[in-house]
Image (cartoon, rainbow, N blue to C red; front, side, top):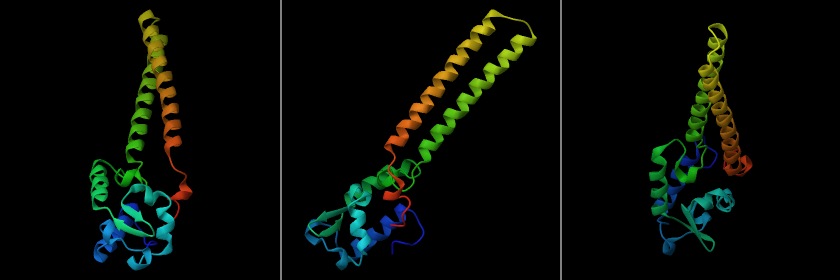
Length: 169
């Protein structure tokens, strides 16, 4: 069940369906993984990221589906790629878009500064152009520093790949 192709969301939906079919949707109706027909890997995953989502709740050695939490995470996920289920499942879409935007802005600022240098060199030496070049250069350096810190922050928040992303569950 857990080795089919598909992302985290699809696996969650398949598991949630099993919980619904068996009626394990409240603490009173919780069941063991064996009763639900889930493999031992489910219990291992519950000790890691799957348990952190709060979608499946452990009560002793039994589990139940929290429809409320599942709906919350699905609603949150409507806004962007991979944003649902606590940002798990390869959801780097927003980060990639932000990084591409930042890189494009840096490139435009850099090209504008270089263009002004050539214009100033070939068409006369104007003080206001040198000031504009200096301002663009400072903006370019600030954007570069911001990008470095942004990447460092994103990497510090990212989970190790061997916990979830590289396994098939």
